Image (cartoon, rainbow, N blue to C red):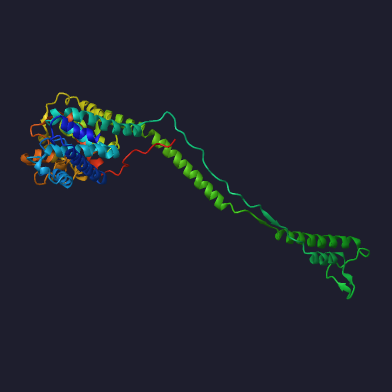
Length: 446
């Protein structure tokens, strides 16, 4: 599409290189250098876009000077071809770079489309409109495809079976105890009678049963039973006490199983959460629209002046949804603004007047805080948020500086729906300029 952008400007007589293809090639090379700078630093996308849209872009703007430096690097004698600063050429180069950048980085696409939807209706670009329409729609379609995919709710959720390799356990080992043979023999002989015959020592006293069965059978039986039972019981206890069973170590297998189950449950919950995120967002938005309550202000929108409520609606919606959102979200915001009733027929106010209100109104302090966090202090061309976030900055309230810093004609006016949509898109564009989201949507794994 890069050749088409510059060729479109040439075909409409907006730029003139005297029919010299070599000069056109130099413009393409310079535009390629700007695209490379944009790829390296996507935060340039917003400023690039605001200059590319404006036929009256100031020559001293930092973006214009950067583009002129790129052109000078590729075409040292360009001043011999153009009698004045070639703003139209610069804009065509920036547009070419933005189209190339948006093809590689969806964040650049968000900056480009959001800025285009805001600025183009207010700028005198009728002779360029055919160029812009096709480019903006193509980039917006690509960004919207990503947003729709991230907001989609699948018909079903597939969860893979849990993977767990059970370890091989060692067999339990049993060591058998041994009965004390000598102790049993000694105890049984002591139970049998007062002495026994030793092959070397002769008669040996047992210090046990003092009776012989032939002398006093009743007493002998009683003493024998007691002593023999005690000896046998002690032998059994001794043997059992020596039995050892070596159990396999189950601590590590159970730890691995617990880890596998925990990971599986976590992955399953993430899959369910990711699959239903779009539904949850839509549910939250419907609740917000019905409640008409501002989370940032902590009060009903109906208690605020209409223009203040519309501005806060833009901020609250921005805080609720992710960077990549379908184009229908802007329409949803507009319908929510209209639910205030009296705003439907409210008169338009100049953009500069609305910005001044945003700089001063106490209820819009959350918007000023958010603006200061997303936009840099006014220097060259930038979003309205730069003026809102830094109301004390030199030039932020200067009527003469307003158009130079924003590109918005001084007499431009917006109704409440358009004002709310403008702020919402600027918030998105400013976030996209510094967001850490992946440049392109990763393909979903099957």
